[in-house]
Length: 330
Ligand SMILES: Nc1ncnc2c1ncn2[C@@H]1O[C@H](COP(=O)(O)OP(=O)(O)O)[C@@H](O)[C@H]1O
Ligand SMILES: [Mg+2]
Image (cartoon, rainbow, N blue to C red):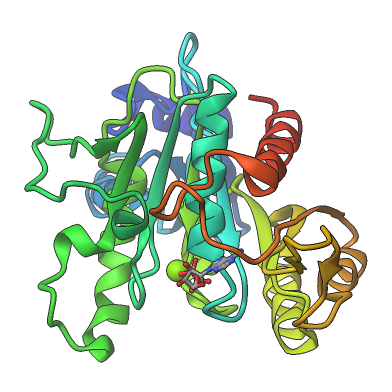
């Protein structure tokens, strides 16, 4: 058995997520045979968490039993292959470090602004500790329906599609049980949702913090980009820098920074009053080596609710949306 023969046998195995052979989907990341005859394999799989076990058994059977190799070592990675004619789903995670800086507000308002620019948008509300997207958008929460191949159909509010941890969590569930459940939910959010045809961008409202969820996002959506939200205050800025650096460290591209609650626009003299201090956004952008997109003033939407539909704030969100469109190439 030569190396080429071994390779071509493995290439004929079907990646069940794509229903195509590993050859067709460029599924072999690495294949080497060591001096003792042990085969070392790295395989790209679509929907790794679902199919890893079954593929492992199939490959071991082939390599050890049928082909008689003395040993095998296999690692699996999530596939980034895009079948021809399919548009890749793009993701932008919204991160902040600290809670309460307006991350969910920015996520929802950015989604609305992208819709105003004619884009098709969805939100994954992954902030399991403080899921608030359904409330901000005033989504009429009802049981989700699913497609024939058991993909969840998201709820839709004014054109924004939404999947939230809150749809799957009993309302009184204590916080300490929420974290462990999130990992399981994320798998379904990234692989088990039927978004609208031709969706341009999915925003992910991350839980505050720097750690494990960003890592999970990296696993499921290796190419997700990140937008960092901070307030002008130095405390929020310091934590936002850490969140951003963490994201960069694991290989996410931070595209920009939004400074929220930047100033109060005094209605009497139209002067900006920097009641929470200033400089947070600039500092964060500088330390992360990206642009400060906008400064969002303090104030509630004139129309009521949580979405700014007119005025200075709506304009600022329109400007952010345009930058996101350019940066994400959507
Ligand atoms: N620019 C703003 N002006 C006034 N209130 C704001 C602004 N941004 C957010 N808020 C309010 O601050 C609170 C926290 O915002 P939220 O988006 O839930 O933060 P996070 O998701 O970071 O925890 C909410 O009550 C929200 O309505
Ligand atoms: Mg929030």
